Structures are given as C-alpha cells and as structure tokens.
Image (cartoon, rainbow, N blue to C red):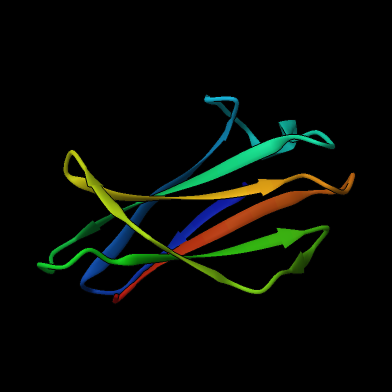
Length: 100
C-alpha cells in the first residue's frame, strides 16, 4: 500500500520506504506541509548502477516520472525522491529500476 516496485531481469526493486525527518512512516501518515523522502532499493546483476524511476501518484493522479541516480549501500542500490506534501490529499509512489 502506497509504495510499489517493478523491475526487469537485470534489476529488481526490493522495496520503497517512506521517511519524514529521518523516521520511517506509512504513506497514510503523510500530513500537509511534510517534507517526505521516498527511498527506493534495488538489486542489480549488472556491473553498472541502475537508475530508479519514481512515479508519484497524488490524489489518484500519476505525476510525470522522475529518474534518480542510485548509490550502492551494502548490497543494494538506493535512490531518494524527496517531495513536499503541498496538498491535503493521498500520496503514493512506485519505483522501477532502469538502465543508466
């Protein structure tokens, strides 16, 4: 609910987590004015780091996808997608790993 993953045979998105002020929260806990970070995690069997393509859905309407470079942290690539909750509505995000 709220955070979804997709992938290909080379890249696999493991999870998307939601953070507010460094604390993991659920998308249902996002409040008006919050600065939120959606953090996507992906594994890769390729030698190069994938990018993650985040698609924010705000109030049931998908926004333009945004590609973010990943960094290797432990055994997973991760990327952050920050937003500010500027409207009192529902927020969710999906992330898909893509070739750089």
